[in-house]
Length: 405
Image (tube, rainbow, N blue to C red):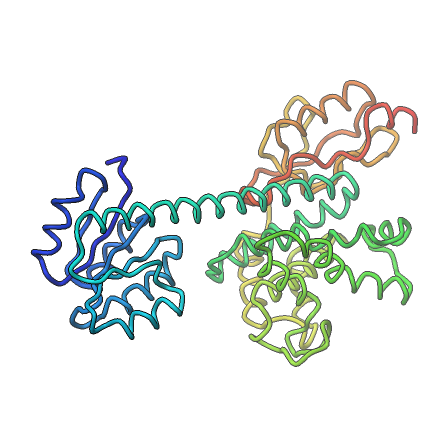
């Protein structure tokens, strides 16, 4: 494959395409198409292209319409339009609507066209560099917050990990496209729990009865989590999912507005069910009893998702083979199904976390210095959270701190 910048040229006149390719092939990797339809077909198979140059006046699909489709599907591709003087009004409209980077009038010399493409390539480089920077910022922010949650509240982090697993399974089953949004929302839906008083947090994660005041604080956890994450770029869809986690399918619940049924974001409906199921399972109920409970909660959950959850429990996909291991048998990738505690009972790592290289080393260090309650209960992993929600540690105390407790 050529290292030259990739450029797609679209024109219904074959002679013009041949001339463009002949004059520019030393500077760019040129692909040609004879119509907007063919151009879209090429893009669907061979994208990405840095730049697209399209003629305006083509049969069936004008260049402006073609480039509008390009903008919708491949927004980072920079779009250039070739046009005759008679088309200026329509081209001006296209430029003003924002889907044309630049337009050139015919006839256009090879030198001018090459210079315009060079400018467009620089614009493409800026766009992709900004996107890469934002993605790295997003991933870095998520990683940092996940680590903080694991350290500050291992119980909340363990619960979030378990919610994430079930939510991901349901999202995959329902065919949701942006599954990462559900994963990130699940991992951070408990961040707001750091605002709870220590005693309330302990009661919550040990499933002890709460006072009405404590219930109100817990109900606000999704909103608090959303507020904490509000300044991270590109999390708008994730924030919406978190905002509506407390919304019942019948429209009751929080936030108090008119949304109901399928108007509620799908990710929110998934997380609401996953959170409720995780809570019942953490109380020791088996999947069948968990399903019996959630299906009797009238108006709370999406019936279609209840059906999917029932299929997961009935098929056994929701169940895991759990094994008790010694420390030397522990391997990266395994999932902790019970809390890891010191011999004195201090919580070291919350259940639900994946054993990473660093976490494995720390568990071994605890074993060697303070001793652990054995065996360690684990299961083999059946899903991956993805790069966006990776987390390495759930440790809440150093070996020295455990020794002194």
